[in-house]
Image (cartoon, rainbow, N blue to C red):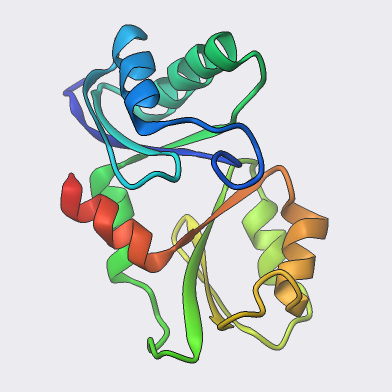
Length: 170
């Protein structure tokens, strides 16, 4: 299998959970054998060279657990797959809405979330659930509450602008 650029997204770090500094994350992933590690922003995002995105995520999870003493879930995606998700975001962007992409860590969770009864704009696009949310209401919105109830530990949410920066850094 050919080596490719793989995006590693950490769940629940630097937002009320454990603090994982970019410098520490780069060192930890490099020491775990992942090639050419680059971090993007300070919210648990890294790009590495790897043969397999899922295996890279498992390697990162094991290294993080050894380094921080707790499980930190990691999603691995090939950079091209993330670029396709970003390019396929179906909603108009404006200052009144925050563009989010919800990614599933467990099988079937996005499909369950996509069928929740909420008034927000939701669209299942490949392996992602795109969400256009009125700015400032993320946690209290009907879908935000459904996300906590249905997908609390089995999803991760990233702002579309963050994902664009990750793709650009790749």
